[in-house]
Amino acid sequence: MLDSEPKIDIEYVKSLTRELLAIPSIAGDCDEATQRIAREFEKYDIPVAETKKRAIVGTWRGRDDERHRLVAAHVDTLGATVRQIKPNGRLRLYPIGGFDWRAFEGENCTVRTLFGREHRGTLMPDHASRHAQTESTRDEAHDMEKMEVRLDVETSSRESTEALGIYCGDPVFFEPRMEVTAEGYVKSRFLDDKLGIAILFGAMKAMKERALPLAHTSHFYISNYEEIGHGTPVIPPKTVEFASIDIGVVAEGHTSDERAVTILARDGVTPYDRKTIRRLARLAQTNEIPFRVDTYLNYGSDASCSVKAGNDVRAVCFGPGVEATHHYERTHLDSVMASARLLTAWLADEIT
Ligand SMILES: [Zn+2]
Image 1 (cartoon, rainbow, N blue to C red):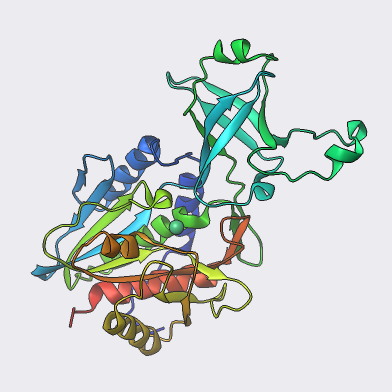
Image 2 (cartoon, helix red, strand yellow):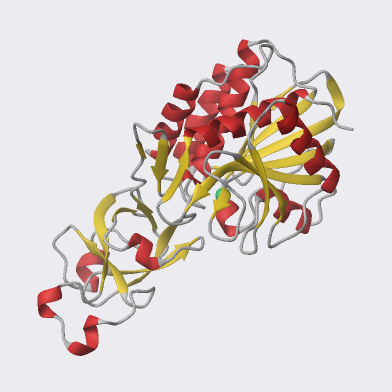
């Protein structure tokens, strides 16, 4: 690491991740988390605007105000909404984001009703009790049609559940289960993308502390519908480069690594901007930041979806290498550090 490089406060990134994970947020119901993040922008004297769709964008003026950058990280996570109140009083769900139901089996959750009451429950298979199984139910698939929320209240009918104030469409938030191990592994169901937001603030804090100017005015977009695919509909008109800070996918057949930052070359939506990818890779090389370049089939980011929606920007995406994405996710602090360092280097670097 060069002496002149801004220093990332990893304890700050960890504690902000933990705090954000403790505030549930899924598409359509992110306001509490968004307000908390707005206060974080205020700490750094970065003015914040709210879009009509209730996302927030912090704008930090750079040396050059003619060509802008946009950096997005999303506050919405995987989750579900109530699809049906069953005759037994339990709930069928409609997932938000792509996940394997088995990954959430047995997880505790909170149902937030339309008028603000909250009820606890657990996502269970319809036939959970091993002692009561028949041959036919023992091996049935545990999926959307065979799993239900068992509410931790006295109810055994649709009417009594409705009397709790529960409506179809009510959001269901699952436990984030964050843990940081002594070896530096970070685990949670929703590293995607609250860790990305914390990385973004880690980079901003490091640059503020060194009084290091941004090369270009930059907009920090905290999007709130990414898992649905329409995270960033508002692009400030002077934006030239658009980077999503989002998870890399550590899996068999991929180059991504839990100890490096992943730069995406292509995802399921589009190839990213080749020249900007090259510049990111060069910045990583120059600053001795461990990095990988990777491609993902079943993946879209705010940046790639924005390009697909017709916006004329140079899209890139980079972030920490995460194992078991959209399952019980894990990365390492080395990867968090590499991502934050690459972000600071890029923000200080001129658009070419
Ligand atoms: Zn994501």
